[in-house]
Each structure stands twice: as structure tokens, then as C-alpha cells.
Image (cartoon, rainbow, N blue to C red; front, side, top):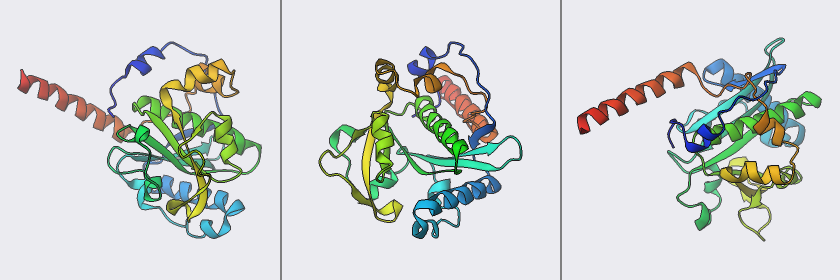
Length: 245
């Protein structure tokens, strides 16, 4: 999983119409931003899972772990936090859901990214933010050469993901208690990143245009720190090539 351009990214580089949003989506890369994420996460979970929300009063170790990013949606008007999601890859350690299940062979040895701690503001704006956070999740997977998106979902939220054509990782097992979400029963679902575009296009999925045909400049999945790290990696790769020649 590198930050170099993959064939998938090169193939999608043509210009697309721009759509501006009333909010931005960025990586929470400092303490104030992570605090905002914690607050909106706790408020969102509090509407449906108040007991679990009580335990979400601080930044979690998974928020700052290697291979994980926390995304933050913020109002352009006043900086209010409107939503958050955490994306964890299995580059450095197993996914959070692997505390509870052993993934099947077809996911073993693959590059995976799990989305957790999704929380958005109440009302219509929250629905819009959720769609853009999902786009950010997909885009992050796309840019980091992830093979499969993996999520856990409780009822009835699991229906949102099956409507997106996610498939059951454990057909027939139904809802499984998950340690990282308070032992609440969740379905484990997955979607192969490479197939999202053709499958959604084939069924004229409602999110197809948002994901594949519009450019959102307000969605930024890099930080100055990350850009500097990528530049450093690039220099080291060049040096390695020189030493090896």
C-alpha cells in the first residue's frame, strides 16, 4: 500500500465537473480537530446508543494508530463539526473487527480498510455529510490501493450498505457481537474496491454520479505532514535506486 499512482488512479484522472459544498472534509491531524471528532461522534451515538456513547468522551488509541485516519466534516460558515469517520487499514495491524472474527480466506492477505466511528449531525445536512464521508472513504481506499472496503453494521443500518451492494463476509451467520463496538451484534460486510464503479454503473446507483462524475475540491485527504512524508519517501526511493544501480 503505497502513495504512488496506481493504474486505477491514472485511469480516473480526466477532468470532471466541480461541485462546491457548504462544508469541508479533511483529515483530523491535530488535537483540536480530533476533539471535534470525538464530540460529534459521541453526540451521534448518543441518539441511538447512549450507553456506548458515554464511553466515547476522549480520543481513542485507534484514532492515532499507524494506518488510521480520522476524517472531519466542518461547516464553512462557522467551523461547526458536522460529521466524522475513522478509516483503519491493515497495513500495520489487524482491523478492529478482527478482535471478534477471523476473516475468511478470500480476505486473507488482501489490503483492507475498515470504516468505523461514523457519526454525523442530525437532520438533512447529516445525510449529505454522510454521503460525502462515504465518498472520502472510497477515495481514500482508491488512492491507497486498498483491495476491499470492510465494515460492520448494526440493524437497521446494515440495509444502507447492502443497498450499496456490500456483501456478507459471513453468509448465514447474521449479526455477530463486536468487541470494538461494545459487543453489540453487527453484520460484517465487504465491497471490492475495483468493482464499485462498474457494478454501480450497471445498476445506475444513486451514488454513482457523486463518487465518479463530480469533483469535490472541498474534500481533501492529504495534510502538509503527509505531503512532506510522501516527499521524503520519494527521495529515499530515488536514493535506493541510485545505491542499487
